Length: 221
Image (cartoon, rainbow, N blue to C red; front, side, top):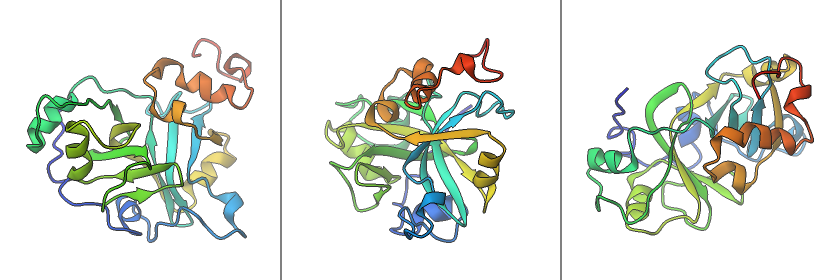
C-alpha cells in the first residue's frame, strides 16, 4: 500500500508530549517514579510468545518507547519494508539529496497509523524534536533527521519505522498476565541490525530460552 508521510513528518514531536499524544496517552514519562518503576517497560524489548493470536504480532520483537499508566507505545523491529525505499520517501517529502549519501532501512513499526514515520536512533545525534527514551536511544519524527541522514550524517545507528503499536491504559499489563509477551533489555544489535529473520530467536536467547521448548513454538521458529 502507498505511504503518505508528508503530514506526519511536518512537525517535530513536542518535548514531553509528542509520543504520548501519538499513542493516545495523557503524559509521556519514560522514567517513572522508583516506587512503580518495576511495572513499566519503557526502553525494554517485548518478545511475542508462540501463543500470540494476533497475526500482526506473531514472532514480533517490539521496542517499547513509552509505557505509563495511561498506555504504551512501541515499534515493531522485525518487519522489514521493501517498498517504498528511503529514496522513494525522500522524493515524496522533497528532501534532498536524492539519491541520499547515506541509506536507512525501513520497517513496519505497527498497525496504528502506518503512514506516520518515526526514526529510532542512538543518542549521539539528537535534534530539536527528538525525545530520549533512555540514555542510549531516542525517537525523532521531524524532517531534520531525514535531511541529516540523507546528507550522510546523523546518528550512528538508526531505523525508520512506519506506524506503531499502541496500547490503552492497562492493556499491555493485561496482555502480560495472559502470557502474550516476554520482556528483555534492549541492545543495539537487536534494535538496529537487519537480520530480521533471526531477531525473534535471538531476543529469546537473551533470556536463555529455546523457542522450540515453548508451547506452540514447533514449526514456527
